[in-house]
Image (tube, rainbow, N blue to C red; front, side, top):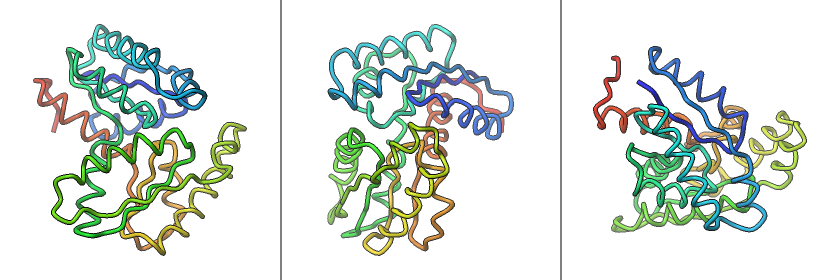
Length: 224
């Protein structure tokens, strides 16, 4: 089995390498990293250039033999959905399964708090959650916050401060939430530091399960 990954944060490649090796030791990861996609989303929003680049990267991963592709950046999630419609292999948006899990976990009339370190992520993730909740008889409420200074800390290479700021935000959000969603895969490591009773959902584990399910559904054998 070959799983393709498209990242906008270079540090996520080794994280998903390790997670894939743990889940399916015989699988092979094929990575593409394009940080400019996220830079564009932050600078001017997700535009036609981002849409085209995402589709091109997915086509490249398919040509490299990927059985399914996971795009690990939430900020470009809507470009991923457009590209998936025309791709010749299954394509998974990193936060789709997490959003469905959040709706189920929150329950009818529940409270979901979304935390992100980038403003550019809140719109795509919020709209995804709204769609996921559309069929619920009593949809949960969704509130979203940006964690101040966390993105700057990560950009400066201070991952420890980034994780500490995210963990502090999780503890604050726990007072007003039935479930907390960390919108970006790069925030996942901070979840363990928060030590809260409220469920905190992160995307890497659920997204990996989703792309493995997609590969299996497409006919690739997944060792059990």
